[in-house]
Image 1 (tube, helix red, strand yellow):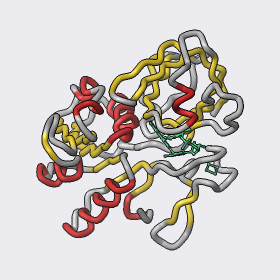
Image 2: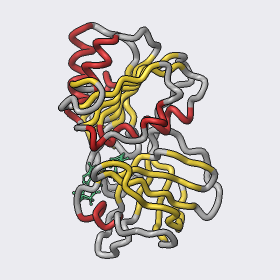
Image 3: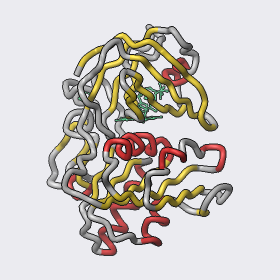
Length: 250
Ligand SMILES: Cc1cc2nc3c(=O)[nH]c(=O)nc-3n(C[C@H](O)[C@H](O)[C@H](O)COP(=O)(O)OP(=O)(O)OC[C@H]3O[C@@H](n4cnc5c(N)ncnc54)[C@H](O)[C@@H]3O)c2cc1C
Ligand code: FES
């Protein structure tokens, strides 16, 4: 893990309210894997806390992150322009380790799609069956990143693009025979996935990336603690963000 002073290379909208920012790091970094995240300064010195964003792409020293504009920090980020300097701490957290699996179902929703893209790029030798959901057509982006998949189903809540419905429904309808399932998306989506796997008695190993409010991002402040299935606690930033779905409460 290292704190870099990066240079903004590009920062542009890729869908409604979603931006992709590309940062050039001053040097090559250790390997970064899909599921890991960075803590990015927003460019507003009055905002002390950096914002956690999942790694989407790393090409040489160019690191791309996609962010939804939500509050003060991400709004400020939209103002960053080529040549600006932003501090970025990386890589943080664990990742989707697919070394034991050959075929993988990918269930992603909203901004949860971006760390999954990094995971596809990381694992070019796997057979991926992807089910990704967006709010509506205006939110759909980066579909070309899924060209490597054996199968891709895109859903929108209102049916304005792809199938009407959500990614979990699309996955269950298709029910691909896979060695593992990985998922990242809003809490309500992960909850639905866990419930459906339980109810249907699906024992395929399933790994989910959790999102919690964060402070330090490095395991020190305990802001990001979540409950584990055995009644304990885990730090999403350090013990996660990727967990076996059976081991955490959602
Ligand atoms: C591991 C991880 C990876 C993430 N990856 C992405 C991504 O790839 N793309 C993306 O759009 N979003 C991602 N998020 C969510 C993103 O961090 C928040 O949307 C962002 O921090 C909101 O900041 P804000 O200043 O605009 O909002 P505000 O609500 O004004 O933020 C106030 C404070 O709350 C924190 N906060 C608010 N919402 C969240 C949240 N959901 N998760 C964590 N902290 C939050 C902020 O960091 C800040 O400290 C990720 C979150 C985590 C934990
Ligand atoms: S954010 Fe500080 S311990 Fe996780």
